[in-house]
Amino acid sequence: MPPEYRARIEASRPGLYANAREQYGLELNDGPFGIDSRPALTGAKYAEAHGQGHGYHAAVFRAYWQEAADISELATLATIAERLGLERAAFLAALADPALIAAVDADIAQAHAYGLTGVPAMVFADKYLVTGAQPYAVLKQAVEQVRAELALE
Image 1 (tube, rainbow, N blue to C red):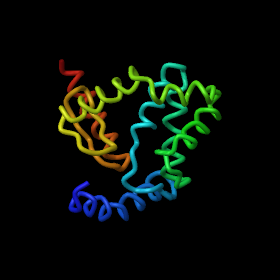
Image 2: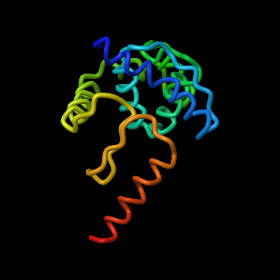
Image 3: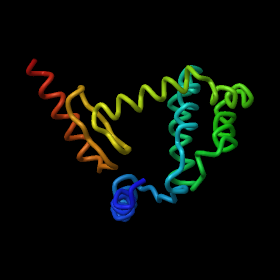
């Protein structure tokens, strides 16, 4: 990771922490910086295929952003999956599944095609991009703008 990119992220963290506290009542205690999140993304594909996508997503975010867990550690991910009722050994095996890895790679390629280089990033109606951890009001405004434009079509 280029040093200037890391510096930009580090500089934005106080605002991120304040936003989480003020807008959502959350105290952030994030995990290690610069880790490989691909295993977590692959795990998400497995969890989605087994009806636990939303629960897995929320649990991984909570683990990283509030519990300071290292979500690049396979044992951490397996414990999260197990808590959701997924079978630990099958989950761990899925993390090496070429089809799931290819699906993650395709998602990453699509993000790069959109010009996304970080997270979070949300695309509304295939037209509007909102990047970064934004206050609720910004997200609400984006949704209202999309709704208004769709109503005109």
